[in-house]
Amino acid sequence: MSKNKFKRFIRKEIFDLHARVNALDSDMDELGKQIELSRKEKKKYRQLSLHPCVFCGSEHVEVKNVLSEKEFNDGDVSGEFAVVCNACRGRGPIEDDAAEAARMWNDYIETV
Image (tube, rainbow, N blue to C red; front, side, top):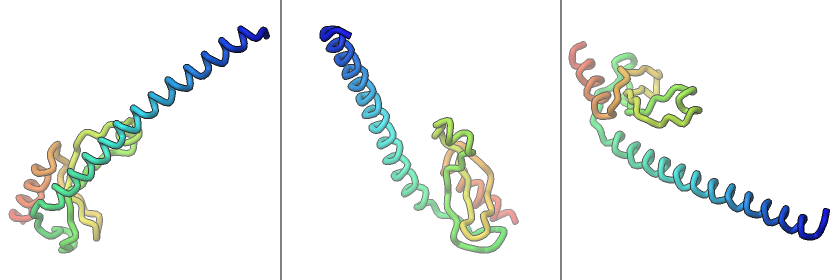
């Protein structure tokens, strides 16, 4: 390989590596935004007032984003929420909104 071809090859490799690093930086920024949003949402959900678990009576219940493993692996971070008991793993109905999941949980508890 001639010296000029080698230089062009190296420049192309450096350019390709630079493009990959920029793409990774962009991915990391997006992931960081999703993590921060997740933290803010989690804090908001913890502030919802929830009745104790209808199954075991535990007060250790919280609204959680309940994604299937496939959705999680596919990167679908859209909301499907349910109230989940941390003691017995009982779960309320799945809703598109955390507040709605809490309301459905509390309404169900009140009718029992």
